[in-house]
Image 1 (tube, one colour):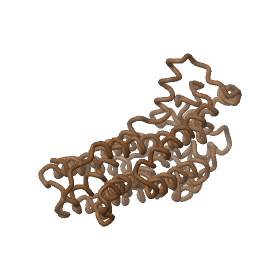
Image 2 (cartoon, helix red, strand yellow):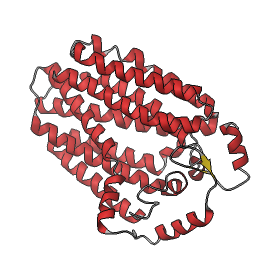
Image 3 (cartoon, rainbow, N blue to C red):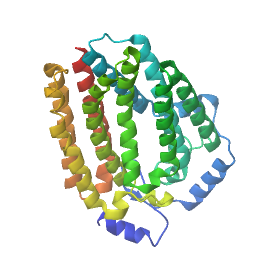
Image 4 (tube, rainbow, N blue to C red):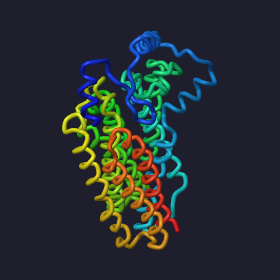
Length: 339
């Protein structure tokens, strides 16, 4: 049975949910209703150690680390163009700013998505009862506020940039996400903005705004790769997005067409990956191996998704592969600037 046929059948019964493997199973209304009542009490129901681990899970530390690496990439590119040595103090401060704002953004996303996660990802901190919605909201706001405050280290231009991006992150979780492809574009923009911010910090430190141009190539590559992955994630969330009424591409155009669009976007990274090779500031011998690995991972992901008879299940696996490709791609650029 195709994924679309499953959804048509699902419209006449309880909203289906997905296991971590991506297969559809019947929802459990009594369990979900009980979980909702517990969550609405506003208190978590676990011990201190479990709660601390839940808060760590809430901010998705691996994604925060990727954002920090993007900041360092932007700084390294601009410093190399300007002929300056890397400023460690500025790098640490900029990394902390982005880490805090990113962590706050992931926490607020879980806050607004907890009803969806009850269906699709009941193991997440909020639906599992390890962190309450109110606690997640307060934690998110605190992280974002501290991040914006620390951005004053680099002056008012830095504050404006960070504040605008922080507001956009929160607006995405609150409403923009429901707009489908617009939300995908916003998330991808925010990911690439970390690279631009690193470049901005370097330019502010040495007073040369023209070196911001060094962030253009890596930011474009990051944006395109992230956009393709975001569409893959909406395929994975096909059933759960009906809970919040998200008008994602799969729910508007269908699974197959969305998979094709995501594939075209992802494969466009291949020609873009040659831009750093010929830019003159990246070491070709360091860049080539990791860039090649990134391309291989992308091509394998596309092939796996398009050949699968169960696109939703395949998307869940492809999403993880693409996460690895993002890391290898960032490292290809960063290491080829350093060595």
